[in-house]
Image 1 (cartoon, one colour):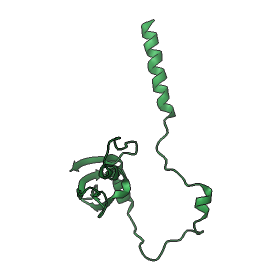
Image 2: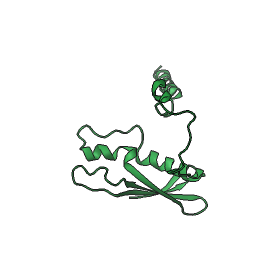
Image 3: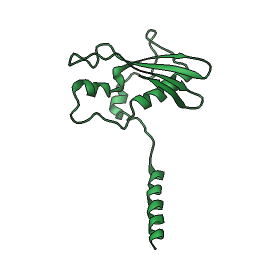
Image 4: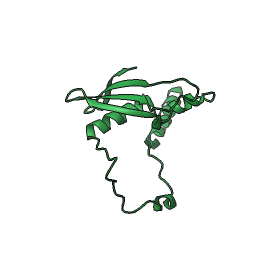
Length: 139
């Protein structure tokens, strides 16, 4: 009888994982979207093309260093809150070899130093894009 109850509980808990939905970014309300010019066109200056492997490596490393489901603690300072924001970081990326991309995160100039503390380079990642995994993190 106990074994049956344990199996039922395990089955019920594993069923909840079937309803877990992956992260999807928030979309703006239609009124806000309608305020943009249509059709969308790229300006002649400021455009940057990011190769697919580099974009994938940056995405993997960013999800590791700043997971979307992690928030700053309640007693966090203004600098700590800033360091939890993805837009606080500049990213450098370069291929190491045919299979590995290097991704370095640096705190954007002028960000996260409200209390006089200056943080610059945060971490460098070696990412195997083809296998979708992080090989090394150097902090």
